[in-house]
Image (cartoon, rainbow, N blue to C red; front, side, top):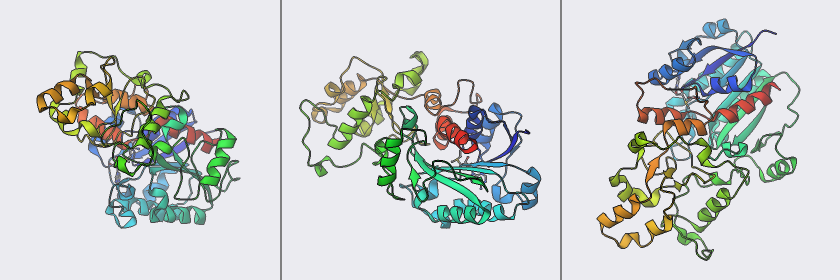
Length: 400
Ligand SMILES: C[S@@+](CC[C@H](N)C(=O)[O-])C[C@H]1O[C@@H](n2cnc3c(N)ncnc32)[C@H](O)[C@@H]1O
């Protein structure tokens, strides 16, 4: 059989392409489309033989789409219009225009694609854009299933809860299909849990134990006075951390179904010094940092602001393993700045390197960035990208 012809929209650095490769599907990307020059450079660096269209999606005509004669669309539309932290402009946000254009084009194509996979942020599931998408899919005769999944579902110690939709044309429903429901695990993950999810899982209020780390998008923010629970004996609470949060972290670190972070880390060497958190940021934001050790089995979602903004953009790594977090933080507020800094510096806190984030996102070691791309730009591009393993598995399910 001829390889599937795949159209990759909003291709960025090529997370979807990488996932397609990992899925071992017999497929070729016939066009990747993105407007971001830098992302396109990284894409070309890694997928040099793929036709890359450096233009806006809404600038592509119906004729041009028809000529591509694609069987599958992989797409990650911009997520800012749907993020919980943003203004949630939804379909009135200009950044949704290209997506609405795709929905307008789809029913008018000479030949409909057989398969569609879409990725977006949590929040998309309750948007008007999603309603438009479902309406269009129904009109065209697609069967679909929606998911909210985090890499933790695959034993990866990184939270990145994302909305996914897979759709296939004029075919039998998926064997696991749960109409009107959003699944929070992969269909092959233990049936009992899946059923539990289905009961708990009305559209818009999805929460499973595996994805519970995502209930509070920024785990370090929230007044602990709201909690009625008392602190377990000997436990240490950060200033801006709730007791529930602390317990959740403890549970995650003891969940042996999740790998330890150390499996994803680079070897410490002199070059790592560039990743150490500068003293000014340490003094200013120490209480807002999500600090993890190599033996931890969790990290928060790495966003595009990582390495630039400190708060809520991703975990930082404690590399001094013999220092207790408690000893660095206890009574720290009472200390003069100099001593405060001395105590915090003992922890040797550093940012995760772009390679380490790429590892957590499932990019293979041969995936790289051109030399001219700066560390901050790498963070930005990776923060916009996706977890390759999660998408690869969804592609396998879709084509399965
Ligand atoms: C969420 S990111 C997708 C990232 C991608 N999946 C990856 O692995 O890197 C959205 C991408 O859409 C691109 N984009 C946004 N609006 C666009 C438009 N109207 N036409 C083409 N590309 C667009 C952005 O440049 C960005 O790279």
